[in-house]
Length: 474
Image 1 (cartoon, rainbow, N blue to C red):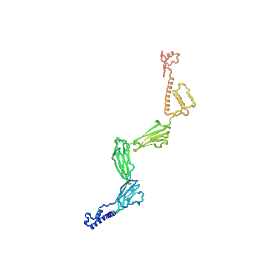
Image 2 (cartoon, rainbow, N blue to C red):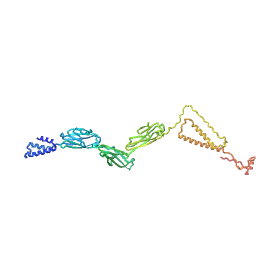
Image 3 (spheres, rainbow, N blue to C red):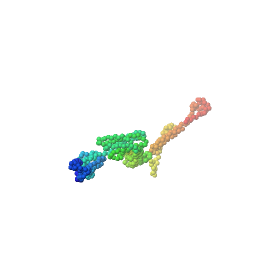
Image 4 (cartoon, rainbow, N blue to C red):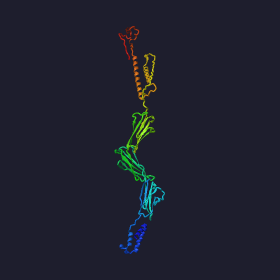
């Protein structure tokens, strides 16, 4: 009897069990004598009391909430404890049946059956999107039906954090500001700041965009000290969908310098050019590029890392060559202006061929006037003319090499010096030719005297015993 009662209790529903137990209790009070309850002398009554006192095992339906990153897979599990072959089914947020036992009425191939048994219905949802978010229902067909709810939350990670500095050049003692932005996330991200191994407080601002995404911006303000040189400032983004998501900024941009390895002097046609780009910074620049401003780098130029090599230069290569280096902080550059000069001139090497010497005879005709009447300027003109003719004869002939600038300057200086020497010589000759003897007017009127004594006596001055005076003018 006890076994039969226990079976009836397990078959009936919860309300049916309660009603059945009330009926049994009521009947027992009518048909069983009162003394029958005393120390349980009746075997049937003891069995009934035992059944009524036993706990009834009920079915229990459970499930779990799910958080999944957009594009990944979600698992929904409906579990039943002490199932008595009741039917399990899974409904979507619109109350449409996804799975009824192991059958899928909903035509959405993203839902796939992972496991089905008397105690569990497990379903996977692949390529989850934001539209899949909502409350899913696990339902157990009992009387009345039992339901359990699984909330699916779709996580959308933020984009790469963007860190910006207000000042490109930082000075000790000045206050600077940095901002870090994490865009388009769900839920909103949390931003933390680290300078070296020290955490700094920031001021966050959360904005909800039109597509129900969150954009978070955090501002950090601090005073720069000498110890901050080369110290990274790190923006750390905390979000359920990502881990160790961060961006950092060093307080030093790259320094770029171009060094000319070859040539050491002027760059001339036909020579080679080798430049080296030296870049340093914190962090160390990882990219070094060579470009030509407003033009393309010559096609046969060889670029190896920070080195630029151009051979057989010509004037078409003239221009500004720029070396650009960049790191996570920013980029810097240095310029080199290339100007190709003419190739150097060289004296031809003498050969064993027969050399023909041409002698040019120059004849200069002076005026047929009295030599004593030739002016000094004429003499200077003729001497300079002779020098210029000789100089032009020395440079005559085909194939004479072009002179460089210092040779021209030396030639001009030589001509000037020679002209001055000619002038001194002509002046010396002129003064020498005008040196002579002349008489004073003291013996005027004595030109007709027969001899000197008579001339002195007959002179107008009446001088006696006077000697002839000679004067020289130089």
